[in-house]
Length: 252
Length: 252
DNA sequence: TATGTTGTAGTTGTAGACAATACTACATAC
DNA sequence: GTATGTAGTATTGTCTACAACTACAACATA
Image (tube, rainbow over all chains, first blue to last red; front, side, top):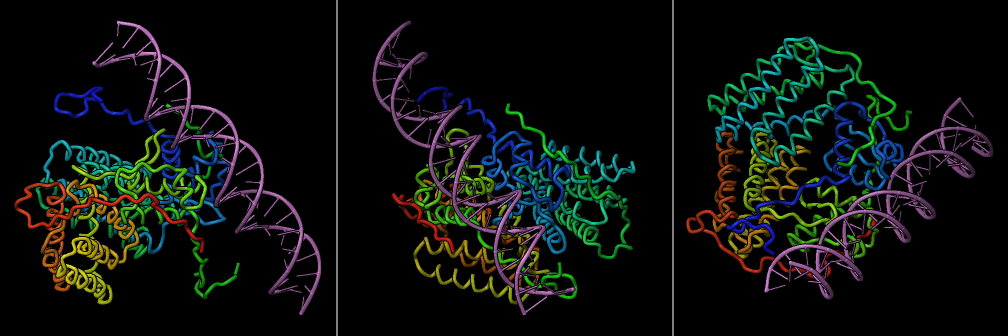
């Protein structure tokens, strides 16, 4: 019983958290969705994907159920799995969820006042500012999502992190789902700075309001409301569909 | 192509969403956790449970992965599945997530001002008031959770609903995880009334604050901080473990 | 021509068998 | 007596095969 106990009864060494095959496959699928290798709406043949990953259908199907629970994949009995599409009212709902999570993150950051955590958000903002000086909409979009991820990550809540990691992917899906292609705002950095300033100032009210404003704007952009009123930049090429989507996974 | 299209191109009739076997199993597992039939920390033998449900291990394992994604089950490679335990810092994190979701629900309810939706919350509150007049801690606890569920349900967001349905189960798990047994506050109704009043008054500030206060109190109750300062009632019998946990599921 | 039916191919859903891993108990060495 | 090694047992992890379902196309029929 006393295998490696420190004096106060707390184990001094923990079980190494090996990743299961299902974990690896699920991660691979998420990456494929994020990168666009698995295009939105794609029907994924289990046999084919299992072969590409070098596993059999069983663990693949188990991993797929995780993404189904997240809402990233949609399963229809007899018709299998396809990558979820997010559009119309779903876009609005997605940003409702993001508002809930990111608002709480702001609140937590202000309450805890952890300098190191806030610094993480700050460096993400700097990345965004840099990217927005360039003219590559894709890297702006990536930095944008990175910032929001950093914001929630810094809040230190395991559950909010889990929610956000799915929401980031769903946001990506929503972007892909827009028929016009990738759309980004020109002046992203400014409104994001407002959030960070509010956090530094300890002003919950302003911070939450800034988050909400950002979300409303994003919904308008993605659902195409008042397209003339928004200062956006559109990029063609909705997404490239490659024949071989997935790399075989290496167990380590 | 034009099989049942209304004039605007939106399908007028949708595919009936048949429930897959995996759906049914997942639902059954969640029910078993909610009811306590699957006790917290229980290792669930796949063979045994599959037999009880009258299915083979494959769909059971797939369903289990859904609950793993939700955090209700914990999977360890080589050691299989067990019902998650929620205690210590996890309790706090759980209520952080609930605060995020329920605060946003309050905000949505106030913004939309949908009388029918608010009425749903009101009836849940009445149930809670009734239960709190009685002395059965279990029915008080149930009505409490029902109220919070109704609150989020009324907000009308699909994603918040999904989060909340898991959070309700996690809250239940947290209750079961308390070694002293079921613990409820004596004056539950009052603080819940504050939330509803704030919604009716359109006062976001007060509503959100009331939610936060409720959550803080719950964390204190469950983590056993200042036990003397809280007006709580404890019930023994942490949970009865029945030999046969699950009913065979009927496909309909 | 349009609609309904039937056959066929391909896919998914489930079950069972096999292989790999982890737990238990016992034996053995220090 | 404690600790380490080893065998046996049981469970999980993965694969393969079969059954069931869906989609598509060719054909028959009104």
